[in-house]
Image (cartoon, rainbow, N blue to C red; front, side, top):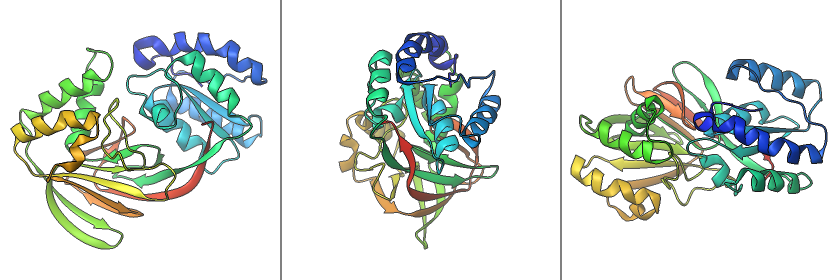
Amino acid sequence: MVNPTAGSGHGRLVADQVLPILARAGELVDLSAENYQSAAVKVRQAIDDGAVDSIVVVGGDGMAHLGANLCADKPVHLGIIPAGTGNDSAETLGIPKDPVAAAEYLISRLSSPRRVDTGYASTSSQSFNFLGTVSAGFDALVNRRANQMRWPKGPSRYQLAMLAELASFKPIRYHAVIDGQEREFDAMLCAVANSGQFGGGMKIAPQASIDDGYLDLFIVHSISRPELIKVFPKVYSGAHVSHPAVEFVRARHIQLQSGDMPAYSDGEYVGNSPITATIRPASLSVLA
């Protein structure tokens, strides 16, 4: 299943590279379509008919998100060929960045796939599975702005979007229920993480694991904008974890209310706050 527009048109070029390689592993069925919704219908039908044993998505984190929603709790494996802007899900799973190497790698894992956790979340308008993160706050605002930008390409788009949003940003009041315990706090950033990385390489929760049976709530408590600008670059190395404003909470069930803030998951808009998220251990089989 190919997203031809991924990575500003890179998706189709990558697909042309990897299709001959993937064909060596068996019969290929092209389930691509003109939009996500149509592709999802084709994939669900193929899975229900028992016509496929693996779904390989070619694209970025949005396609990985779609693949997780189609394949979780199904008798199929999910493979990812990275061809998007961020490719955090592929990197989390150890899939090579080079498309040809990624295709070879997926084939090598057909006989020994791995089971990983997914998060299951609901917002004001929908419910879904997620591989990476779900959030409704400053990071979601940055994601929205980055998705609207056409320049620059790659992860630096998120950095510029962050600076633009920061100009008028104020701390957000959160009401949270974490494994049944209520809390209220003001925060700059707040995200529910199944894996430790988002936004094109930001290691927001370095200790998070995609197969530990827990979610990790990442909080950056209220600090000044200059202090946030100083701390933010450290997320690319994970060095931000020692800052006194940063907090991590491991949990299995998390509710977040942050007014009418937009919610994003794996780079995709998924509605608005409130967010309810639950871990679903070993719910997805991946070629990794």
